[in-house]
Amino acid sequence: MALRPFHIAFPVDDLDAARAFWGGTMGCPEGRSSNRWIDFDFYGHQIVAHLSPGSGTRGGNAVDGDHVPVPHFGIVLAMADWRVLAERLTAAGVAFDIAPRIRFEGGPGEQATMFFRDPAGNAIEMKAFEDLGQLFAK
Image (cartoon, rainbow, N blue to C red; front, side):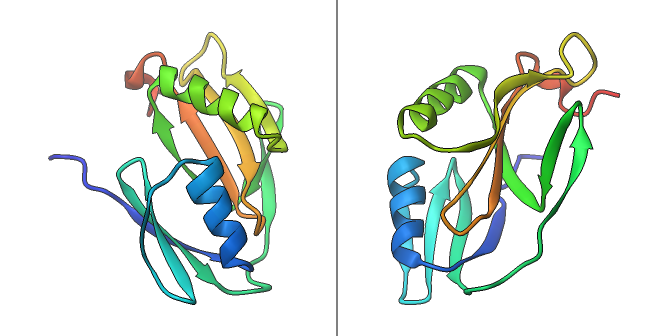
């Protein structure tokens, strides 16, 4: 089965800040929008920032020595694209919850990962695998 684009809607408290971050810092082209929401092309997937001040509870879990924010979303990039994004975010002064690093090094599921937040506090994980076959490795 061909991989289909996913869709996710998430809360933000400032559409201008969301537009600057997702469209500018992240480089996601903007699609449709209104005064309450903005569609972005997130590597071929549709994400929608919805104006919803004060939304959501946040927690976390321990994973390979890091405190991983929950909930979070992201995408699995090619390793070269992940490195370019890590450099762009670092140069833009994005504060990382978990700085770009290799997780599960030398073991099943070895991956590059980084966690950061958009201006509304939504946690984003961007990851990559040298071997995509490790995506679901046990």
